Image 1 (cartoon, rainbow, N blue to C red):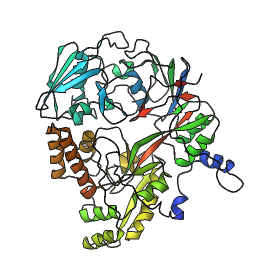
Image 2 (tube, rainbow, N blue to C red):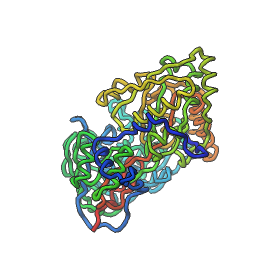
Image 3 (tube, rainbow, N blue to C red):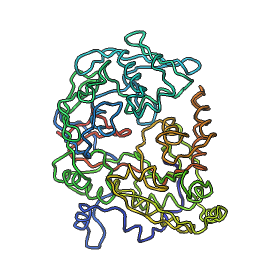
Image 4 (cartoon, rainbow, N blue to C red):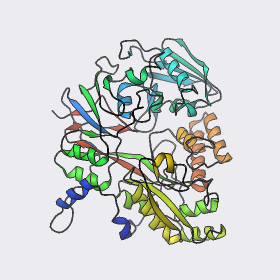
Length: 532
């Protein structure tokens, strides 16, 4: 998770062995070589800042290439971990997160709490219908929320909501009114409903929803094959009006190179769930058929230190690991500048609760801390894989930066297929990433709170947990912001996660695509279209 600090005086010198390992795929290597000018400088242009906008043609079919998923893939929002492209098109939430990170209306027009932040009332839009024609009522929203906290369902969002939501106190007193009485005060509760698991489904549809995909979104399901192809078509009775496109077709492709080659060949229009490495992105940008859209700060990259495993049980060692490296160097090498330093704070820069608190790099202080800890000449293994093209360049950049503090880092490449079952949360030090788009309360509680199943460093700090509890109970928004910022400072100073950077996600798409706008890991399904 990310932190924030801007370095001064220009970028540092990049060790040559690191710079040469920036992540160039086969397709990128061939195309970049052919695109070099006689003087040896690449003719590839600087990457675009955003996708083309304009008035698209009415109708058309958008073709999306996505990573393959297992045969257990489901359209059930409560449990889906891969079908993101479908979910955002088929469903709506009660509330959503807007481009500024604020909670905004979706199916709920408004919401309010009592003075204690315990009783929340949501007022739904009138005239919303599901794809089967049934009218949306608060009974559907109540059913969705009760189901999310059902322990038998084991929804990822259930671990976030269960401490707050008693299913017996989720009621629908009127067709357009939902009332939720929480177990304890929480003035951030609506923000927790922006998660993608919280899409509203019809009352009683839980057993079938994974295959039917019946929601209130701008597209309805025509076909779906778990892990394979699928097609969604425009829902003309959508409450905001029909989308521009007639349909979206989904194709599963095995690896990044296959998806990129299909885009360059004009066989697909958009690569989904894929962050292109910088070199490949330049190749795509230089082509006649394709280009790049940048989703700013869309991912935060992490080097988690498992605080229950040696040598990271010692807070002095963890602190030394953080002081030893230069986040700006990691950004410049691993991202070629398409991101910002994280400075070990997971909350994205510019979002409502972010703090610019950071600790300057200090290799000599790192050496001293290691000596105090009896860990002079520290040698560690840092695990990475081809699962994401940025993992290895990030690990190598960290290795070279930390060497000045006398820390020896051996970068070990593990299999992508088993990386998140055998490496993540098992090895003492490894590379990973998260999507941004989470509200700060959920991010901090889900990834850093003591005992959370997603706490990848197993860090436990009672003061940190207490700050989160106090923030949730605080009605005044400025005071609440201050408490969340205090919690971030503890993560930076004492936590087990090194967050070198936030990365712009580099999305490959056809030059025929207009109005690609992404928030979190969803795009604007209603406005996206193709050139006339």
